[in-house]
Image (cartoon, rainbow, N blue to C red; front, top):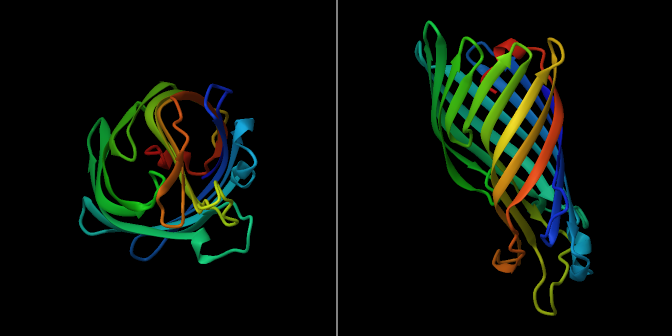
Length: 272
């Protein structure tokens, strides 16, 4: 699976406008005992600030994230699977020499129970994961129940995935979902907010309710358009001790996402 997307926030009343470009590549590898799933992602964040906030925001206009995650899953019974994950990545503005502060590590353990019925199939996932899914790296639960019906309709309840997908016809579907965006980036050149405090980290977290329309072009290609109402927006600058030195106090916003996916195994990946 290869996907690329662009997230854009129409100009509103906040001090900061947020835009994001993302490319993801997922490659499965079959082993003698189990599977490896390789995920590579590239993210570019562009932030536009109120002119009254310059000049210290010049270093905070662009952030980059590159991550590699590998998941290993193997069967431990007819219905249960055990999995582990490991992530290495970098999130930074890259305005100074690369250091250890630019990199982050993550990983976790999880169990999966699969069930197959006459009209549907389901999957229960339970585990723990150290990740930056909510911006700042932390230990988070991975729990979710997903059910897929033979007609293409599906739903998931849990974290980080909660959605309902309705298959309008074989080529078109609409999905309602809970959507998260975020990063926790190193600010390498450490600009000074004032004479005493320098900016060392930038933390961003957005949570919202989204509605996505997806259209299948052919057996492999699909396009999508998504609108999200972000009811939670938190953008904070931190010092070296990771204490808050400036909270932008962002209001709820509506943002638009669009993109394209290429999937050579589309029929086998309906859980996505």
